Image 1 (cartoon, rainbow, N blue to C red):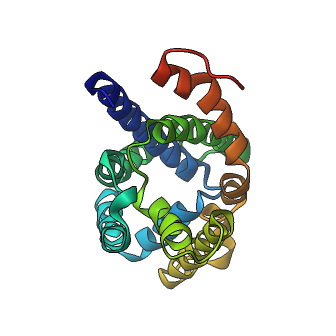
Image 2 (cartoon, one colour):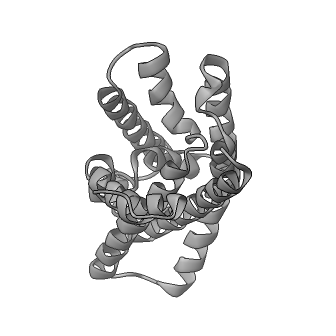
Image 3 (cartoon, rainbow, N blue to C red):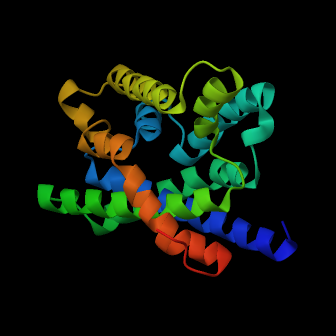
Length: 220
């Protein structure tokens, strides 16, 4: 990998993480469910009295230690960009949007959900195409299936996602949330991100992210 190519990959990783962080803030405004790991973070955020950004760094630092112990192959520059930036950018985006979108109607929330899904897929395409490491959460499923040989990735990932959602809901209830409020952290948005993001990410990969990296259009 030449130096110019590395610079481009780092820039793509940084851009992808920022876009993904903004999308999570939009998901939180929509309050119709976030991706499985963010469901866990939402429950933890309601229970632990520190800022979301700092909590995100601490949680991912713990997951980073797990990855470093069992297989550091998946840890790269992008891992640390994600660890230190995503939580704070998400917090800033959410707090800013709260001042702009006050008491959103269900229609506005649905529009935010759609925008959030499109943006997170767009950002993920850049982040993944850069190939400079994965998030600490992504590394867990990869280690379980590739290093420990405990199952196929798609099934291991479904299990880890389900564990995150369940833990998030339990933590949310422990923090005083009501059962009727659970769909705000584990709802239709969670289902969409868990099962339907793949095709849209691949679309952005083929038509935007890979051409940006390689300087030419990739075959579909």
